[in-house]
Length: 184
Length: 144
Image (cartoon, rainbow over all chains, first blue to last red; front, top):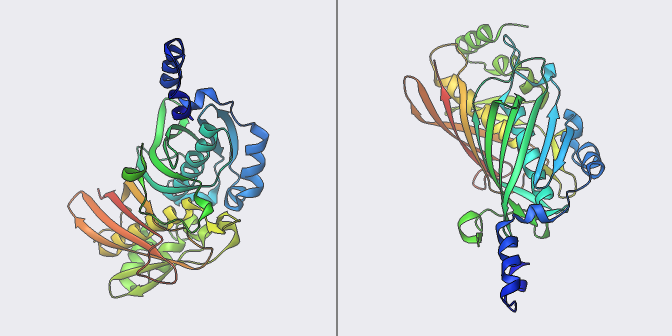
């Protein structure tokens, strides 16, 4: 999109272009509507529907979702602390869908990798909220970061991820093209 | 239900690790079960429509694959580890290599390093062909 513009422009336009350049693409595209995402997580992603993942907010390049505490997600029955796996699932969902928010449209995305740091146990009887930001997209790859928390200033887990954009044109997704080669 | 530490102690005594898996509610939710192999426990995740993340492909949810890998790493560590305390996961790095079909999925870990306080476990998940893993992960655990 940017390269097309860049070629023929004279200097007054360069100021605008420079502004465009400094502005993340995500700020220029209106965010996806909440109902679209709500329907998607409830009906189009069976596992999220099963878990009861709730949409909290869609921003420009960001996504926030919540998961209410349920006994079946417990990892340690003595303490009632959530299993790491359920945090992984929430974080993967939110991170992947923040890519939609950054692109302003629904495209097939596939997770390439996730790196999750568990900072503290997820407490029993409290909803777990995850907020993800897609801070960079290239034609093929999206880069995300995500925080899971009960209280915004006290994170339970953080995660960085990379996603392949437009993955379903040739499923199944093969690994190699990833990060290094595909970045602009 | 037995306490987790009792379940771990019993699993170590009898060599039957299924009780240890069942003592963790989230594992039961996934329907995880274990097979014994020479190299330690092999985690089996049965095919289940509720675990699908993308019905069009169709593919398992990436988070479920991550959860399977983490559980397999933890089981491998508990099998090798002498105490009955449950190690804490410090972090997990998952590489998704192929889309995981909604079929039976296997995972097995291997200890890369087992220190006094920290263990490093590498783990692979595969479906019909062990030489074509769908995902691999590296996990760090705190043992104390």
